[in-house]
Image 1 (tube, protein in one colour):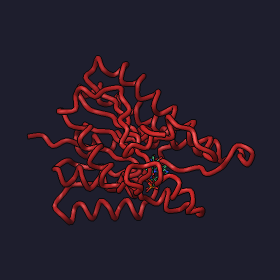
Image 2: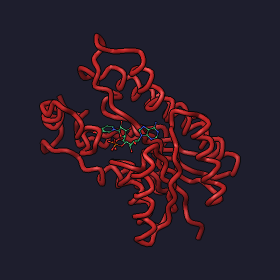
Image 3: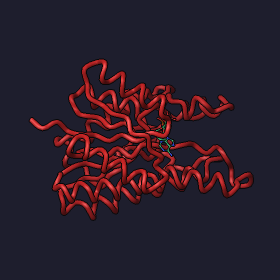
Amino acid sequence: MTKRVAVITGGASGIGKETSLKFAKKGDRVVIADFNESAGTETAEQINASGGEAIFIKTDVSKYEEVEALVEKTVEEYGRIDVMFNNAGIGSPTPVPDMNLESYHKIIDINQHGVAYGIITAGKKMKELNIKGVIINTTSVFGVLASPGTFAYHATKGAVNMMTKSAALELAPFGIRVVGVAPGVVDTPIIQGYKDKGIIDAMKAKVMGNKLTQPEQLADTVYLLSLEEASAINGSVVMADEGYASFK
Ligand code: NAD
């Protein structure tokens, strides 16, 4: 049986790293894409050492030509691309009055354009190779709920939600699914880096059980969404937020 090939951006850390480990454990070939070369290489080595198959390709998702090259190199190496997980992202704890254009553009370039480039390049390649693949985009509860202090981040995740729906519609005729996954509060370096721990406590309080979601739980969700058995889920943003967006 042909092994699936999964490209995972932001695969060096947090949700992306755990998802890379999960897909590899399940027998898929994994391409870890990240701009953190040492951590990405380490994750690929960890997979290969435990009997899985992975390569690392250094990629800055905010550069179209690098994402295009990532998809090309994946196909050169493994002959196909079945799953594109557009997950790389950064936080932006900057409220509107303190915003400078440089940091605004940086987050848009990574969180929004990076996902768009992944959708465009993987969508084109899957169509060209006649692969009925799946493109999964990491969005956030902050794509549907506003909170103070993260204006630019909200803008990017709202865009990812809409790109997911629109791309799903356009790629459906080729048998390609596009799905979003929206975490709530996940225990990864993005939030571990918050200096004001009160923000984390406030976010935790919005989650059932008052706890942080573990990145392994997101990896499980992404894996489930990638399966043929999830074929009815298309153009949807699946809330993997332990209730964050469901209650006031
Ligand atoms: P993380 O910091 O552990 O992982 C993000 C990864 O993306 C890192 O490995 C980083 O090097 C990589 N990255 C950043 N910019 C990049 C670029 N330009 N090109 C390539 N790689 C780049 O954080 P995480 O929590 O695992 O975040 C993954 C995704 O989940 C992000 O899109 C984030 O917005 C989203 N998310 C996280 C949470 C949370 O609570 N942790 C909640 C909702 C959504």
